[in-house]
Amino acid sequence: MALLIAAVIGLLCGPVCAAERTTIGQLVTVAGAPSNQLYGYGLVVGLSGTGDQTTQVPYTQQTILNMLRNMGITLTNVNVMQPNDVASVMVTAEVPAFTAAGQHVDAIVSAVGNAASLAGGVLLPTPLRGGNSQVYAQAQGPLLVSGFAVSSNGSSTSTNVPTVGSLPGGVIMSVGIPASFAEGGATRLLVNTPGYQMAQQIEDTINHFLGYGTAAAISPGEVDLNNGGSASVKFLADLLSLPITPADEAPTIAVDAQSGTIVMNAGVELGPAVVSHGNLTVSIQQQNAVSQPGPFSNGTTVGVQNTVVQARQGRAEVVYLPKRATLAQVAQALNAVGATPADLIAIIQALKLAGAITGTVKVF
Image (cartoon, rainbow, N blue to C red):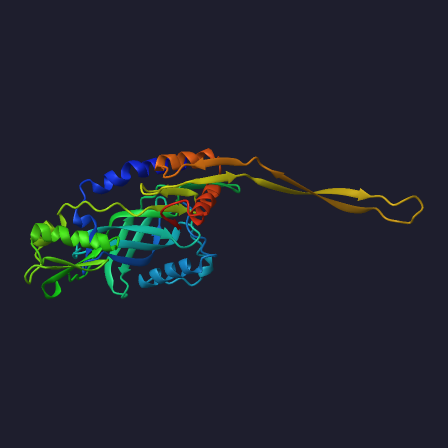
């Protein structure tokens, strides 16, 4: 049923959603103005007994000692310090292009020790650095955690992931991250999904609305712009808002091998093919028995293990897939096989090897 629902969603939204109200700005990224990723290491305090076990996570204890030392507090006996309301965390944030000093952005806080939950915790001031090790921002504040974990007497239960929380607006930029997107009077557009047809279509659309020579596709992933020596905000705003109807996506089957999720877009076709599916179950059991010696044989009683092997072959399900079956028919036929998600993945890969399926199978 899950496969059928996913496939039908792809059938309904594939050609319609792609062509409806799509703009060039949704298909490209302006070169020289990317988003930037920041990271930092910090402490979350105020946890209700769900923090790191400092005897097992020495770097949490060392971080606490360093923080107290910077505040003029020195402990002579650190062995007595075993707090369970503090957790070491990594703070990550993605900063949009052109974010200036003083602006607020969101962050994600993740435990790096053995804390059971970050719910109710407060992040202490944490500097965030870029890939060049320069500090660009500082994060602090109370966390929002959607999950929870409870344990008692060896039993525990949890919902979602309580060791990851969000920090909405908790990052304040210290300095702006520079961006250069119009060097030499030219601007480059990077195609989000590179392709010869897509790049040429973007060039034709821009030149149609703004005049020949405004855009030139120099590769499947890049379209160069020229606006007479300047790339003003208005020019880019008008250009990125131009309507465009991209070509249909190439037939693709995405397979998540971990969860067994399979998603196909509208270009996938099958047939003709015959799929036979059956299950072979092998059971191996050991039965313990006792061997008794004969009378007056001076023997000893010993234990004996008897191994019993049983094999059972399930009834094969045979499904015929007609030529050029629609996506809905593909989903219905595969569901009729009655296979598990792992079996469906194997069936799709076998169909691809047999040449009975159009499209690229991507396993991730």
